[in-house]
Image (tube, rainbow, N blue to C red; front, side, top):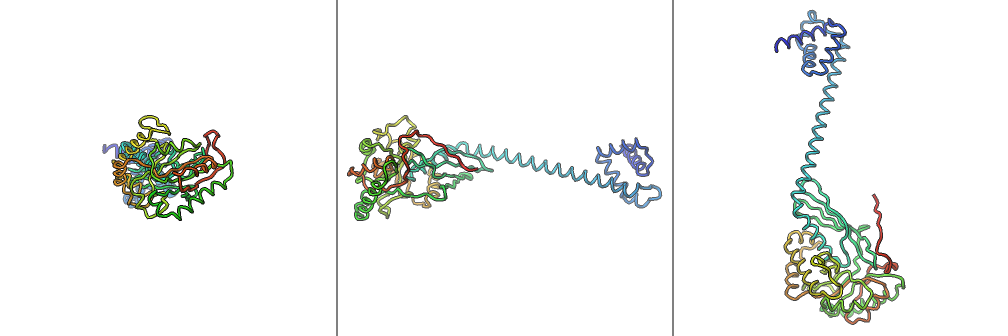
Length: 391
């Protein structure tokens, strides 16, 4: 090993003295390019104290030649450093991304259906006339997940996009929010709880006249959306027995949860009312339902879904608080009241031809109309449309 070291040093010294022929120089330079230790020995011979002290015995190459050799070795060292540093950083990033996806999968996959189901229910139960549509879930960095779904309102036969429901989850803590189109959503649909309505007759009479008057002034060839309240609470079957006489769609039903009478308002809107979409997905978990009839089955499935929300209490309350900026939703009290007293309705959101809605004025049980969105006639057209988003 020592002889090999001495031989390499002697060869380098001969190179520095200029004693090698062209072929030997070419071979030595190739060896130096491939062997970092040999390159280091060359630099040491050129710049160490021995070389400085014995310049007569060991003459060096020209200064220009030395600078060329040193410059090449420095650049080679820099490129090697950059290559290994960049490669190392890239490898670390790839490993982190893979680890992040694996962690998210293991952490969220068992509960991903719960997040989506609670999100659907929060939208359906607390937003009159609004339903949740298509969307998806994507994983973020470690233990984070994002869910985005379209929000729609039915006006006539069209499902109109009105915004998005977004849920950003870190660990198991959701941050739920509504992102409305153009930054806002007109809340035009309100309800009057029967007992409260009796205490505000003058106000209610004004609403009564203005609502029907607005429908009367709208032209034929339009469709409208309307919230209607009941003179007294009704069962599902009682309500649908009235509505089957009219060519209208019911898109939301307001349910009596025992908290409405305590609300200090004659008109109850989003955040104050609880209800559900008659076409909500959970209603079809045990088979199809008829619009007219099946009232007891509807009530049972609704209570089952509320029990599910109670089993996901922390998740449900977190989303409700974010959605309506209030923590006093009294979820347990509402569920307890419904189980004790049964499911009764006190209002509905209906849509259809404007003049068909106006016919409801003749029904003594249907009061206090609030007209919502209005559109041109689309009632008998094919129920398909497309949306193109900016990108």
